[in-house]
Length: 140
Image (tube, rainbow, N blue to C red; front, top):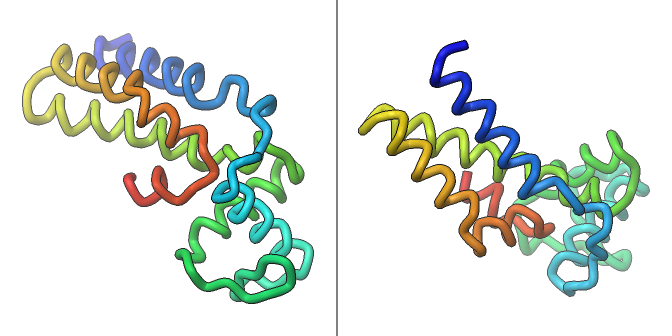
């Protein structure tokens, strides 16, 4: 196995550990998170994938792509906290992989690994990767 593939494997493990582990046990209580999750749930239940709605009222404040992500996760994994947090975590891992790829193109593999670990273990990055908000999707 090449050194680069070994690093990518470690990055994937780090991302899964940091961003997916425990997501089933974090209740959606934040008002912003609950707005996104409830809007996606209502869109899924209504079968209306073009008009975001919450509490029966249309709500066009945010990009629809994020609602589609949450709806896709709800369809795949059921309507629950882990599913709502699936795509932010997946995009968090994608951000780590892109950081590694870009940095190793500019510098070298070791610098890329260090940059990726620093990003992945940064508090804000970890929080955004576990939160049902558009930030991680838009970041990536």
